[in-house]
Each structure stands twice: as C-alpha cells, then as structure tokens.
Amino acid sequence: QVTLVESGGGLVQAGGSLKLTCIGHRSISRIGYRAWYRQAPGKQRELVATIVWNDATNTTYSDSVKGRFYISRDNSKNEFYLQMNGLKAEDTAVYYCAAHIRGREYWGQGTQVTVSE
Image (cartoon, rainbow, N blue to C red):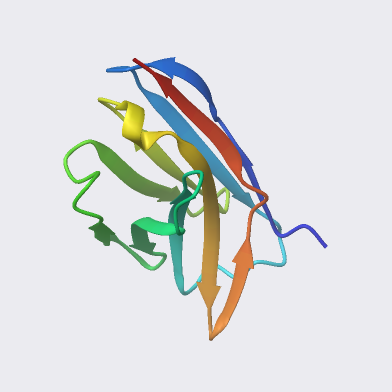
C-alpha cells in the first residue's frame, strides 16, 4: 500500500526555487511528525526538516538548509510541503518524505531534485 506520494522535484538553476509536496494516504493518521530527507549520490541520507503535525510551528532544519527551506503542512489535505529557495548545486539529491507515527515510519518513493550551476 502506497502511503505517501511525493511530487514537485525537477531541474532548476542555482538560485531558483522548488516546492515539494507529500500527499498522505487517508490511512495515515494526522499525528506524529513529518520529515523531509535527502540523499545525494555516494552520501548517506540526511535529515533536512521536520514538522510536528499537531503543532505546525514546531519545526527543525538542518544547518545546510536553514533560512532557505521551509516545511509546512495542510491538515485538511493531509499533505506537507518543502519550499526550497536559493537552491544550490549541493542541494542536488533524491528527496524523500516520511511520516513518523507512534514508532512507525512511512516513506515516499523519492523525487529527484537537480540544481544546475
């Protein structure tokens, strides 16, 4: 069963913006927290941003994206987002969304983001 579906990746020039969307299946409870991760070729998966579902002001960001990326969610749609601004070549990676709910994890399939110089 597909629980999370991502969209919004693509190719963008350095300095540009993209917005990733993660749509939760109706079976995904609207609790816990959500996260965006990324994995660049030859590197380990990196946690990029998190948001607590029931407190959308409770967010965290990795130092590498702080001030450029913003995570948010829409409770009515069971969706969450990653707004990426000021993209850099080093942001190139496959981006994954995840839901962490009561000790369980649910993952999206990944979406490629490529930033050209």
